[in-house]
Image 1 (cartoon, one colour):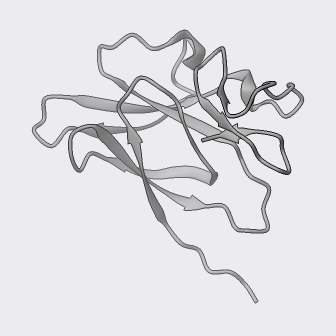
Image 2 (image 1 turned 30 degrees about the vertical axis):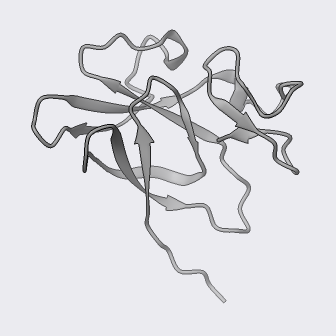
Image 3 (image 1 turned 60 degrees about the vertical axis):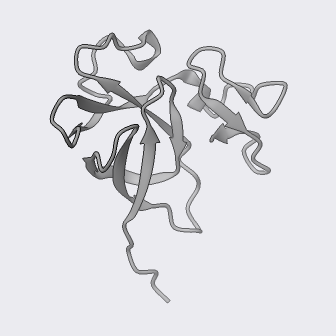
Length: 132
């Protein structure tokens, strides 16, 4: 039986930290429904597909971009969302930190944070760790 496509929504907190989401492909849409978070719509990973272990962070227009998100954000920019009152514009950036590299050794203590980008890593029975 073929599994039908479905679209999910997730909230990314505006808190200066990367957050893990298990995506199949690209973010489909971004918007702000209320203060404190940017919503993203995406196609989730089918149960039989390997986890993607991707993480994203929200950065405001005019805010310095953390160095672990890169010096050229063109490749990591995944969407823009305007605050409901129009005062703030938020950008969804993908975190390309090397903690995603499957060849990199997992942190010795889990759960824990990646020392480079501060993403929270949690145990995964198959892969050793993944962004939370």
